[in-house]
Image (cartoon, rainbow, N blue to C red):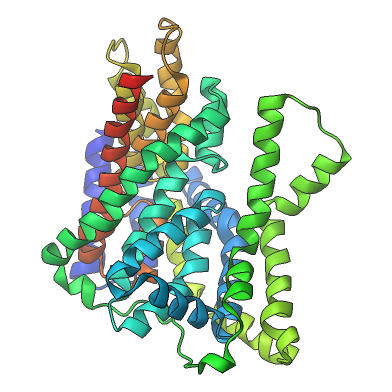
Length: 448
């Protein structure tokens, strides 16, 4: 019954939004109420579950989302995004610009959360799309592919780090194997599939994206900051978080103890700290250094945040729906389906994570829940490659992003697509990431 309830809830959500044109956030909350009651959550706990899901989701991304939007707008309004875009176009050429976006997004995505990568790179993608007169979706899909693959496979993202700890896998090896698996995966999903999607949902490739993230100013080359300082400002949070990741990985592999220096590094390289430091640096590099008044810079920051109100509510609504599925014990039901299984632990981990992902919506929750179901099997198989089991878990957690996933709404809204177009692009794309990740992990297992 829980799977039937979920299916009916998703169907009702689609009807409310597509047939009755109801506001997306309102639709998500209505469906969250009904699904919670259908799953047997006591009426006195339904509101608490919805508030927990909405607050938990926005609490996780609120600071970095808002500061990331400010950072992107500061770079964009100063002409930095325009300079990066024109330089990339000159270096890679129009025919290979998707490759440029893919590579840049993958590099950024290694150290940044999925949503932060999108917020930071959207202004740059808009600038490139505007310069080349192409759809934002054509360039946005390679970006979100790279960000999703990094989020699913690579430490220091929370899912891979946590699942490595649960399986007692080596984080350094998982990062190495994850890069090996991710490279062919992002090429398939980020370069090859968009060409197919253009034939399946051609209307998506006419979209200009959300005006919340758009760059509307035009610049002369001499009005823009240098390419080097523009890239450094955009990548400053990446650099800070990468330093923190290197310290964490080094500590786990070398085993040295915490001290005041490590504590300070962790403090300034935490994602929230890194973002506020990056905004302050951008105020200087994109503004004060170029004699732009502080008031003008703060106007850019305010306009960036003001435009994100509805988008944040929609993402929070997706988190509310996710939470009622968790509180309705859908994960426990999935666990019972697999009691006593004897299949390959790599395949088993992927299937469990994929089912949890589809049912619960959150890739991170799917990643964190799967080890509890897989570890009893691993205890009877001492020769299993734990790093590959962890990667398979991450691959399963990426599959089939749809309406109960906050990331789905973020991609849909920021790229300006309707639900049908988002299904035909991002949902299929995330499924390719999940399936390809499993296939390449199994191939890697043949050699290891």
